[in-house]
Length: 326
Image 1 (cartoon, rainbow, N blue to C red):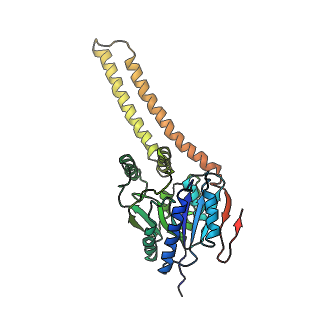
Image 2: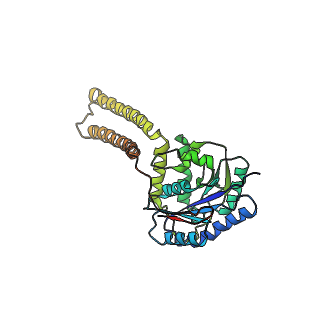
């Protein structure tokens, strides 16, 4: 007899006390619907990961674990370590056959999880949730986001266009993902490195129902640069090209200055012919050192081999009973 497939839904949460009361019933209903259709087993579960929230998020997660005994597991990080680390902590806590990651704001419609499960049963180990359109975004967000994906592709980084962290992974794909030990995570890039058969499910992104976005412009820019520096050496190679261009322009300027001095009477001793090359070359040097410094900083972080996070509490019921490990 064929073994039924168990599903884990992993939800990173940071200051989501306004959103959790709305998202929790929806996600549990999603599990119920899939169980009723015999697409997943009855021991499927929801994992809520508290990323060091400062509000009542853990209190709500703890209550959900007790109220929905056996159906909800809670993981609490000792401090805020960022969305990617919180997501990884949830993924590592699972032991189900397939795992879906989704944000607590429900902008990624959970009804599409059924399509992802269908793709898994069709033989795909990774199923990417891909936004069909960005109608809910502002012009600035849409322009910068799509421009970023195009830039990453030009730099040789293999990303799924308009895909964030809404995805399904099989157990063997997740086990392969967990072999990557870098401390600076960029999961949407690493998942592509894993390989295995994959598919995409398109969906329309919803408006956030409550609370505020946890990714303001500053964090988005930092995340964008982190993705580039984690998977592409193009900025380093660009330094060489920039140096060649700077050398060529400087050579032309030197030829012009010498020609003016030797063959005309227009040479006036002044600061322009000195200052322009100095400013140009100096700016190129500073830019180059800055890019090199970013990569050296990343090497510094990796060489320290510090833990990516620490778990403060875990509420994970077994298949037959409920227990808490503090």
